[in-house]
Length: 588
Image (cartoon, rainbow, N blue to C red; front, side, top):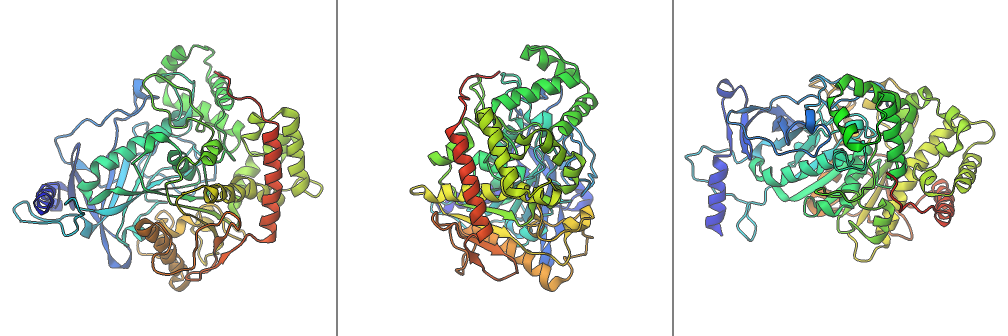
């Protein structure tokens, strides 16, 4: 065993080395399956350093005929790949939240890149002539490596990237873990479905699976432990992470899951094939493609200029409001794995994914983050024109029409006292899309026999300096969507290079506490390894951690408002289920 460990160590000596910047125009290098990669030493928190490899392709770029295909393996390179800067972001229109961060590397369909950030000491940095043995070997003689966090960015499936402008790794990597962020196909490129072999849908999810498999094959090259991967995401990224945990395709690719302001419950999106067909039909009409033959449509789409597709996507995105193209429940297609093979709620209730320890979170005032967008699309006018808009997005596609309309009116009567108004709608938005789904995810998990523990938090900390408020020029009470994220990842687009959260004494303490929750979860499957205070959810109590001040544990039960809201939506959901439509018929 020691001999095997030594051999692996010697191999690693040829995989990762500190190199001179004059020779390769970079500070550090590693050899992954495709070839040598050059990165930079960067400064983390607490005067730490980390090795940062940015813009590594994890699949062939989906260009031309590959536009809607599963990613093909990367072709090996013989040179040293420059991984000192991030690659371009995937094609998108920034219409959802307003401009919080501006992409600095451009936008292109050639966007399939991963960023790997490693504590410098985790790299086996030695000369190839040195004798070296791993100090940390398991019982089989393998180096355990460093725990890995793979993070899926949000953006309502329509926008976003894994860039360090919003997902700066400095806080986390300084605590000894590897942080991986990446781009994946989004909007029409990632989630258009024709329910056909050439455009089956869920390409964004397939990209994520490709990335997770890439991590398994390359983890040891950058000092990581492929058996100790935590999958995390925020908003739509959390939805993707949860969907992947419910999929049979991803077995063995990660060990635990962290969901921030999002879940697989179809609340702001729907996996309905009916919706997917309606979306495809409307988009193709906008684009001027009238064919119903999926092969002919595919041939037209792969030849259509990017600008034309983006313009049509933008029109349909406005019509859709917050989301347009989303994950879909898949039919079997020859030669393709099914990522989403059933309704997510059904899968959760059946116990799919119960083996993963899980943290689920939401904030106190989620929808303030998208208030500007809600005003722009006139959400109140849309509700007046079509009350179904106010319901969880799946219900209109799975419930008898007259019942769905009755339920929509019940929600309107519950929240609005007279005229529709934005402040009351922000409560509807928070409760329907985030708070209630979070409580239901943990309740279903906690009721399962032999399930891994699940933890719930409400992020209620109001920062003295909020990067969200500063980045979007907003003012509001409570904590909005993304605010918990900014205490785990550094908002480098907002903060100067030498700046920390002012004042350091309070905001920086919260950042330190939140990141420690993540690191502890990665090490011991619970958010606090060394002290009690944050307890697993009990199905009959739905206890959660109310994160309101740094270093103060506040494990509480749902307050009266939350109790009444949960009871109300339980009633809505039960009526909807009792009046469900038969959606098993093929709809394409």
